[in-house]
Image 1 (cartoon, helix red, strand yellow):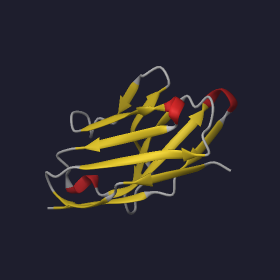
Image 2 (spheres, helix red, strand yellow):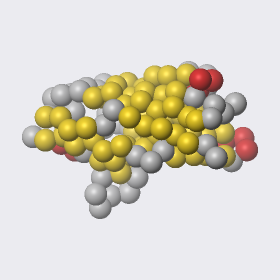
Image 3 (cartoon, rainbow, N blue to C red):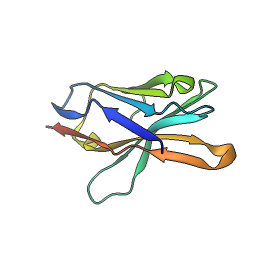
Length: 117
């Protein structure tokens, strides 16, 4: 069973920064996409940012220019640098990995990010 281990969540004031980290255990060969989703209370889970094994990144409009995704799918690591955080960024952030070609995916347990005004 694959386990995605997240770390780096916490509480900050608006304008602050946090860095989320995620690593898969055991190491999985052939991951094509890794990324982050988030879910705020009473809302649906939404995409924050993803990256592919080819280095292509994708961001939600709401985080463009503030968040940066990085990592290495071959090493099963993904990071999310979050700057200029806003109260609307408050949510549980989930790490995600997938191999779309074989319809495989896995989720982390989630890490709480709380931004106060």
